[in-house]
Length: 131
Image 1 (cartoon, rainbow, N blue to C red):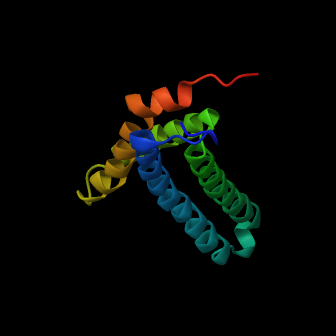
Image 2 (cartoon, rainbow, N blue to C red):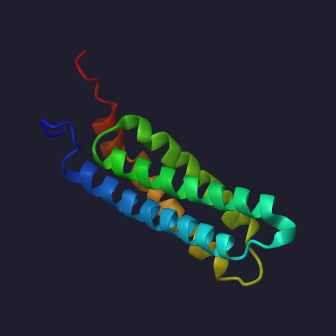
């Protein structure tokens, strides 16, 4: 870790890789929120608004956690790991037709999990700060 509290070296590189993957996922959630908002119809206003807000909040939350983990905030790793596990479950449910979809969804999640749970990242984020 640097004197500013940011991880350095290999841990920093791994966190940047994970953050980049999560940022792309977050952008996907925001795009889905915009698409959902554009398709709200009169007979499903409540569902459409709720879904739009949910997707937008998830996208914003993932973006914020990705940024904070690169700054050395250990708490931010937990929501990122949890989100990647959810994405792996989604990929499992997408297996089948088309056959290419599940690997496209799963591979970035696996790479992000490997980066987030790697020993250098665990060491860098596991250091206790002086109180």
